[in-house]
Every structure is written in structure tokens, then in C-alpha cells.
Image (cartoon, rainbow, N blue to C red):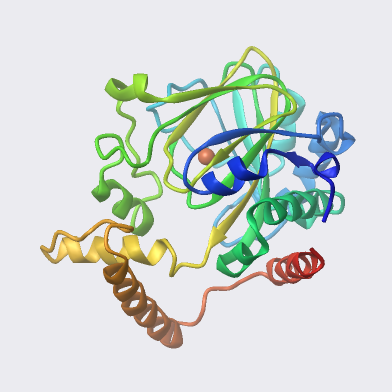
Length: 316
Ligand SMILES: [Fe+2]
């Protein structure tokens, strides 16, 4: 096991493990100054990931939008040619842009960064966590000065690592049903990625962390959040993983359909026996459907990544 001073992610073990996927917390990291994250390198990286063929994004593994927005606004999604992403990075200072480079761990150098972070996460949390995980990802966010990232939810358990510039993140308590109603979560997990609705009347309940190069924040699943960049270019790395569907996704999906059938379901976590039953039934139904329609495609790179990380975990 690495000495704590050799880890990329630096955090007290108790705080890290006890609050993992429960509560947000701050930590430190050692990636500041790594040349992989200089803007000139990110222009090259954007051009490479934009050429990937992906079923969901027209621009490969790049997504971006531009224009100033407020936390409760959904940005307009322009259908620009993929090459534009690297152009936007070149003029990021004035572009009012928000750019995502997805799956950067599939590129040399960035793969090792992800694996170092996941190694630290598994060492700090315990390697048994690995069995619950479906896949891993590293995402880069590049944002223009003062740009807001709208209020949203994520399916992933995330650690965001600030690499360049200062920004603030506003996080809300996922257990607060006024802020995160069960119905909103069920729609989010089942039918609409943009179902989370910002409620400005509860803004005073937000936990606000000031992020700067070298700082990081953990974001549990279902924790609503929005971000505001300071008057500087910001580069942020997001290291995340998704659990197997049976642990979270299928519970919300089951509740979505139960509610549509006129039944008021218990929220996940309230009744463990009911959770197991719902998850088992929904998972069996899902597999039956996949037998007919085919299993979702898992890229070979993701399977190889998982195998490499499992190998790392065996060495602890
Ligand atoms: Fe997010």
C-alpha cells in the first residue's frame, strides 16, 4: 500500500471512507502542474477525442456549449462540427464556453492518471468497493471565466480535482425532499437526464466549497449541484465510477413504473427488503429484455480498463 504522501488523492482515511457516496467532502490532490493539463495539450486532446465514433454524441467524446447562463437555466445545445471544440479551447478566455472531454482515460498519460486516482480511492475506501462498480471514467471540464455550470444531478460517484483557476461549487443535501423530491429522481433515472429542477428558494441551504488548484470535492450520486467559475479559465478533472444498475438505477426505475401504476413506492434505502425485491425483479426483467433486444454495447476499452484496475486492486 502506498504511503499517504505518495497518493494523488490526499484525504484522511476516516473522512474519505465514512462519507463515500454519502456526503460531499473536500480533499487535496497532487496533479497541479502536470503538463498533461496545459491548455495546448488539451487542444490536441480535444481533437483526438472528437474523432471517436460514439452512439450518443455527434462530436465524438466532446460536448460543449457556449453563452452565459444562470444556475437554473438549461443551456442550448448547439450542433456544431466536432472540430469546433478545439477552436473553443484556443479562445476559451472569451468564448463563454463550457467544454467536456469524455473518457480521456482512453488516451496515453491520462489513463495512468485515472488509474492512480482509482488506486487511491480503492485504498482509502477498501478494495471490496470494486465488486459494486460497473465502469470508470475520467472527464475534463474546461470553462471560460465566470461561466456557470447549470444545476444538475449525476449518475456517477465523482471526485472533482481542480487543476487550473478558482471556482465555487454549490451542493445540496440529497436527503432534503423539498430540494430533491422522489418523483424527480425517478424521472431522472428513467426518462429524462435533465429532470432536476433548481429551486432558488432553497439556495441558502447549499454547502458552498471554494475550489482552487490542488483542491477537490467529492460528489455522491443524486447530490444536486451547480458551479460558478471565477474570473479565470478553469480546468477540472472529474474521476468517477458508476455502480452496477442493481444497486441504484433499477430501484429508481422500478419506483418510476410503480408510481405510474398508481402505487406510492418507498424510496430506495427506506426498506432494504423491499429494495432487494424491486431490484431483483427489475434486473430479471431487464435481462429478459436484453435477451430479445441485445445487451448494451460495452466498449472493449472499458472492459480492459476494468481488468487493469482489478489487477491493481489485487496488489494492495
Ligand atoms: Fe456534475
